[in-house]
Length: 126
Image (cartoon, rainbow, N blue to C red; front, side, top):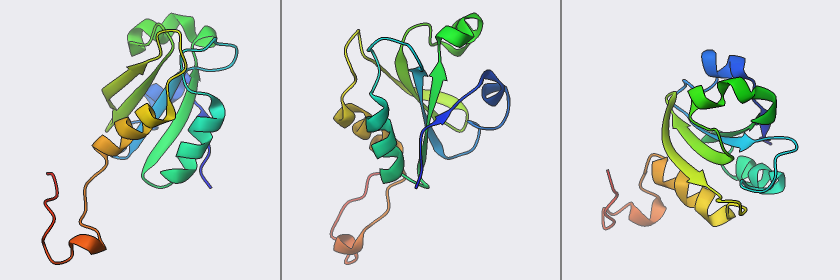
């Protein structure tokens, strides 16, 4: 079962986020007030998307000197694909809803026809 991993600045400079797999980073971490998703929501989504999307937390307070370089000076969730930030959710002081995170991730997952579309009757976005 997948879980939410604590992410260090070395991971940004390494290969953690450069794989073609999707990665969601919660730029909040320990001790940060509301503005991102609760850990239990991220853990739930990590299990749901196991093998298709990874979930991380990054402690903004412990890494103040690098947050500007990462473009995350305030609490937010950032979706990375191939090492590039492709989408961002800001809580604006409120907790980001599970549905918003779910939509952000599913928009970027590769679309494949399912069993209901085996006859070609479904149009699959490209």
